[in-house]
Image (cartoon, rainbow, N blue to C red; front, side, top):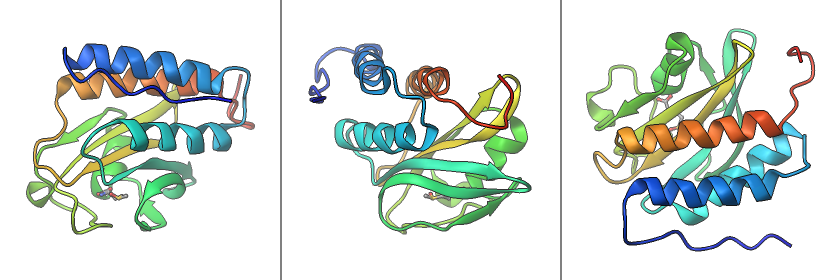
Length: 168
Ligand code: SME
């Protein structure tokens, strides 16, 4: 049985993400199912990272993102590419950090408590497969260290998981 370990409360965010990376690698070890892994990764992040009100995945289905496994309040199901923070990350093929969602044109509010957001695209073998989305009720919750840390967690997720029909 996997038991999550509390993250270091002293030290910097590098230590936090190093611990998360180690735990995530153990959690996903030997399991190639992309949906099961997304579900467990959402639960791990939501359970351990402080000040989140939503953590989860959207997967690209044709021209739009469709809701995947998540933790938090119910969310909008379909987001066209180029819309909202999630669709913008897909269009740019790059992570998007939004310190204040009220200042982001086209932000899609699933939970009115959300104040800041981090979206990391899932890119495997050059193809965008979806996004990891984290929301916080705190303004400016996410910085560059969170972006880098979450990008490394997404790489662990992508390396562990198979995406049938999306190449090797
Ligand atoms: N805020 C996102 C929508 C997804 S929810 O936050 C879960 C966006 O603007 O794309």
